[in-house]
Amino acid sequence: MIAEAEIIYQKSIPVLDVQYLCLPKAPMDPIMDVSSSPSSPIFCDLRVPDSVSTDLSRPESMVNFGDVIQTEVMESTTLQFVPNIRSGSYADIGNRDAMEDEHIQIDDLSAHVGSLFGCLVPSAFYAVFDGHGGPDAAAYIRQNAMRLFFEDVDLPQTSDINDSFLEELENSHRKAFLLADLALANECGVSRSSGTTALTAIVLGRLLLVANAGDCRAVLCRKGEAVAMSQDHKPSHPLECQRVKKMGGYIDDGYVNGLLNVTRALGDWDMKLPVGSASPLIAEPEFQKVVLTADDEFLIIGCDGIWDVMSNQEAVSLVRRGLRHHDDPQQCARELVMEALRLNTRDNLTVIVICFSSPDRSDSYTPPRRRFRCCSLSEEARNRLRSLLEGN
Image 1 (cartoon, helix red, strand yellow):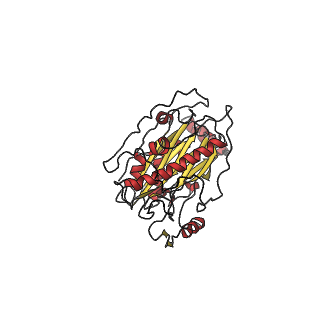
Image 2: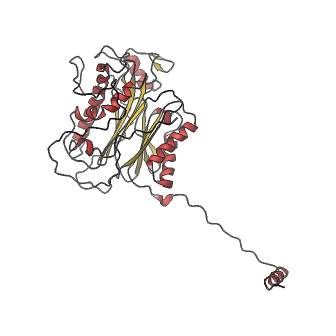
Image 3: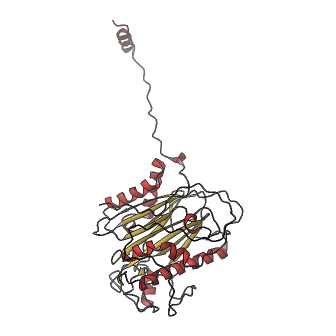
C-alpha cells in the first residue's frame, strides 16, 4: 500500500546570489492545507506560560555532542557557488497499519515568508516528522509549521549571514521547537500520549542549517562521501543516557522510562507533565550548520524507517547513482524507499532528496569498448575463402 508523498510547495528555480531592496513585510501566504481535520485546527497566537522558561541559553542538562561541522562565515560579496535547489520526496506506509509520518517540502521559501530573511536567495525549507502514539502530533505540527517556525518567532532581519545572524537563527529555531512542543500540550485535539520526532533543514543562500530532536536523520553528500548532519537521540547514546538519568528518568530495555525509544521529541505530554517541570524527555533540538560549496551535491533527510536498514553511505551512494542515471530527485527518493522495503524495514518510510547542483556525469560509468583480436589465416584457409568468394 503506497501513501503519496505530500508536497506542500515545490518549485525548481534558477537562483542568483544578489541582494534585493525589500518592501515592507506583507502578510504571509497561507500554506496549502492538505488532509486537515477538525481534530487538528490551525494553530494561532500561542503564548508561553509564565511558568515555562523561554531562556534560550542552553541549560546544564543539554548535551553538546561536539561533532558539529565547523561553520564558515559567508562574506557579503558575490560568491562563486550558488545552490540551484530542486527536490523530490516519497513516502510509504511500510509494514504498519497506519501512516504516522509527515513532511514539508518547500523549494522557494520566499513565496511563503516574503522578506522575513532580507530576501536571501535561494531560500528553502524542509522537514520530516515521525509520529508515535497516533498520527495527531505529527499532523498538527505539519499543518501549523509556517506559523510555528516563521511567524511566531523573532527571525533575524538581515541579508548578511554573519556570526550574529547564525546565533539569532539558531535561537529562533530553538524557540520554535519549544513553542511547538507547548502547542501540543495546549491542544485538546491531540492526545497527551501522542508525540513526534522532528528534523528541519533550512537553506539561506549558501547556508544549510539542520535542527533535530529525535531519530530522523540528515545526511549530506560531499563529493560522493556521506557527511552526517544530525545525531540520533537514542537511549543507547551514552551522553543522552546520562542526561536522562540525571533528570530523574531511567532506561529499560532501550526505552526511556520503559515507554519511548527516543530521548527527544515534541509532545508526549504524559511523560512531561506538569508543564514547566524538568523531564528526561525534552524537545530541545541540536543544530548542525555548514556553508555549501560546489563539492556538496545533495542532502537526504528521512525518518528512521530508512536508517533502520541502511547506512548513511549506502543511502548516499544509491541516490548519487540515480542522479547520474536519470537526474530526478523524486525518483531517487522513491528508489530509496523501495530499497528500504526490500531490506524489510518495519516502519513507515518518508524521505526527501534536496539537490544543490546538477550531477557531474564526467565520472559516470562508461561500458568498455569491445576489443577484437587480430589473427592470421593459413595459406589453405585463404585459398578456400577466395574460392567461396569467387563462387567456385
